Image (tube, rainbow, N blue to C red; front, side, top):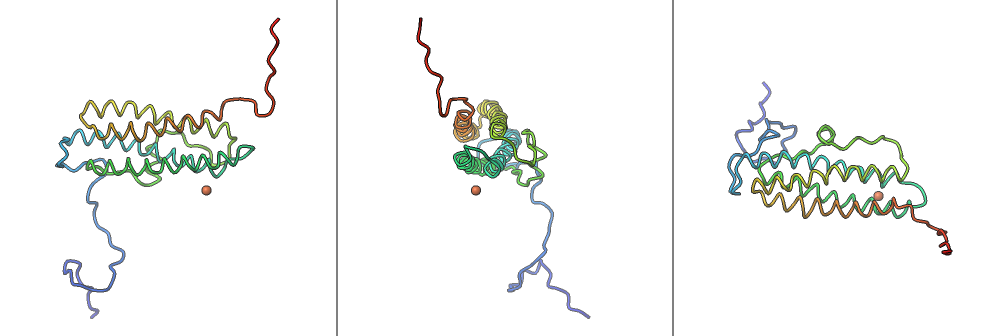
Length: 204
Ligand SMILES: [Fe+2]
């Protein structure tokens, strides 16, 4: 009779890695741990983590929109936009980690995988193909606006509920980064002359 594999409950030391394991979830998505030494009650942390997951899904989508734009940009401003889009991508990527870890430290569960992000985000899905620069810029600015609007509402709600840490992160990190990136994008949509200006007319 074949010898049975050692039971996982025996905890016998062995050099054999245990492959293909599975178990039930430790914590369900959409819940928070009940007690934490943060002086923030469970309902507050539940509300904040729900809001932050929306912000996270939208920020992940904006981040990926920047990478798409970085790869697919074309035209006379290719080089500067290729670099700028990647710089903004990196900054958004840092925000993603900051938001996700705030959700975890509040006792919640961060959204993580692409299909879940796609289901949750409020930013419209772009086409798979390449778009012109003005359309890329407009798409990015519209996505920023979704996030900035949410940041202002969320910052106010966090203050009302006594969660100063979420207020600070939303304003100092997410909102301030977004505002600056909006400025850098918007200036590319000013139709200023590149080579020849309109001459001043002599007054009569
Ligand atoms: Fe690259």
